[in-house]
Length: 198
Image 1 (cartoon, rainbow, N blue to C red):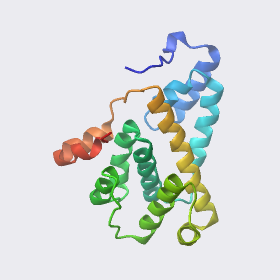
Image 2 (cartoon, rainbow, N blue to C red):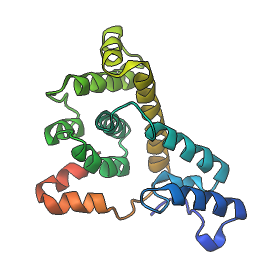
Image 3 (spheres, rainbow, N blue to C red):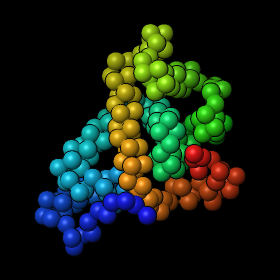
Image 4 (cartoon, rainbow, N blue to C red):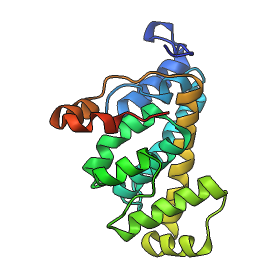
């Protein structure tokens, strides 16, 4: 059970309802999910958080495949089980291989077949592990993504770090996910991949 109890529709203040309706109206799922539910307690924070999340997604030069890779590395680093669960299906859909996802899940260095994935993984891993990025890794990622893309990569890591903290600290529970259900149904062998171990 979640430690926080976000307000139900009938309990919302006018400002909470305004922000709720704005975010839900723009959401792919048509509902507040994950940490956004908790952030509704301070609607002005949710309002700005949603704007940032949309800016990171809409018009981004960072390829979706690499964004999902960075999110998985972030989820694994912080142990954010819901974040992991929700982002394995889109990572698979974007072309991140099951073998790469399994290696990240097991805290092993993946055997990458794509140079950009290898270099983005190194960038994320170095930043989390060493609190810096080596010049050689930085230069390789810059070569793949350019200045805008490498800035977007760091924003994705920061944004999903906030997601991780919110999910973990408040023990938020997942909502039912069609994408997760579809992956589990289409390949029962992938169910284990969806579950992040401690």
